[in-house]
Image (cartoon, rainbow, N blue to C red; front, side, top):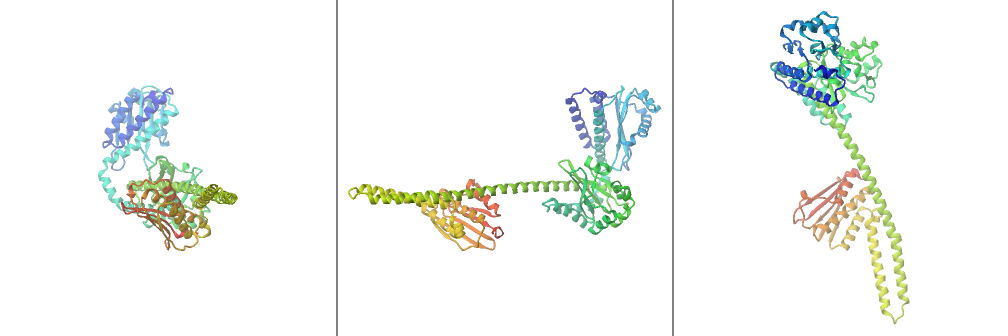
Amino acid sequence: MSTHVVSSANHSLVERQSLLDTIYALTLALSGAANPAETVRRILEKLVQLSALQAAECRLSRDGEREALNVQVGLRTGDSALRARALERLYALGGYSRKPMVVGDLAESNDPILQQLGSENGLASLIYFPFWNSDVVPAGSLVLYSATARVYGQHELLLLQTFARQIASALQASRNHHDEQARIRTLRLAKSLGAILGRVSVKLQAAHTEDELFALLPSALRKMGLLSALLMGDAAGGLRLRATSVSPSAMGAIQNLSGIDLYRATLQSHKVPWLRRVQANQTPILMHNVQRFLQPLLRSGHQRLLGKWLWVAGLTPQTAVALLPIAIETRPVGVLCIWGRGLSADMLPELAIFGSHVSQVLASVRLLEQVEAAQERQCDVTRQLINVQEEERARISRQLHDEAGQSLAALKIQLFLLQKLVPPDQPHLSIGLQRSADEVGHLVQQMRLMSHEVHPPALSDLGLNAALEECCLAFAQNNDLQIHYHGMPVPNVSREIGITLYRFLQEALTNVARHSGGKSVHVLLKSGSGGLTVSVHDDGMGFDPQKLRAGLGLRSIRERLELINGAFEIESTADRGTLLTARVPVNAEG
């Protein structure tokens, strides 16, 4: 990378962002490359061109059947042996710490090999980044050379270190394109595990809450012959054991031996290299020795008991354990540890897919819980609003009946008395007073009907059946409809259910009068083992239910029924009328 880009503290934020975008694009290209050497050469050439470096070199060590990789740009091929010795010196001087090493002035270095490297190649400074593989052993390096001596700032080093890590990770992915035969063998070996994890994944779909998921996961894995422990993040930034497939008796024995409540103890993941790497890189790793994995988690006084704990849990020190990152939207939230016979690094792809699936299920469960909580809050608000509305309706009904109704009745009496005082020779005045008294009487009757419509007293006084029948009679008197009511005595129902079914009937009859064009309506109330049912069937013109745009009234009725676990159905056919049905389950009553 350009010495100017790395060392200059005056670069603008825009230029730095542009550099980051370029790095990201290059590493993406490397990840999908079929030819690692050629792709690395192209990246190094682009990097030297972009950043005005003198040279760059990338090396990967031989890894099993994989050949070593050595790609350089801007360096003489005859100096390969000298550079190899220089890299060995850099590793000996501090590369084992896994941190980048900066040699700002090769000429001033105390190491003769580094001095020779600079003088023979016209190089003045370098930055060395060691690569490490999943087994925590050196895997190679990236070296960037400059023709001038430079002092590198902390931000520049951090940027380049990130770039080096991305190249190392991408190189590993690119190398996999050359392992087709090994991959075929891997797929054969992992076929059984993949089938097992697939069946477990299907079972996890049944979880609706976090607790259900945490109970299902270890149980399902154990049935498939795999043991597990799920560590989830807590509010303090540590990890706590949330679930395990180790038997309760074994867990109790371990807790008795250690004196530690394993479900309350907090692990500081940043102090444990393996956990830190899994969470930081969001990639699974395989520890070939479970004892090596557990030792950093324990205090020195407990480490000597580790062998006994493993024996109690049915494990041996050589048992392999896979660490799978659990993340939601790239945010690490936990680590799933899986162990069992036959686990190997060849199975990491299948394990990674499974870990990703667990993460997706956890995210879905949490989202579902949030949605359900929001819906419950909305239902509470709706229920409170309905209660307030009904209380206000009852107040208005009382005012109409007790105050306005009585006042009108008193007025009718006064008109009647005035009529008695009219002289016989003024019959027209007597007739006028009689008409006024009749109008007031009609108004009293309308006021009474309105009062009952706003809040039916029969519902609380006579019960649901009588209230619905009264509603039908009152509606038929005020509309050109023949309403046939067929009811039956029903058990005492709650005020909420009674008023909901009454409002349903009011809204259904109103829709018949306004929209159906029918003349006859059949209303049915029945009670059975399934609960209460109120249906309204008219002989109107009908419609296509798929094209119905429910108005505010029907939407309100549907919401009311859902609050009491009820259901609302519409059936209609052109020229055959419409059937509206409200059902309330028995367990909603009381």
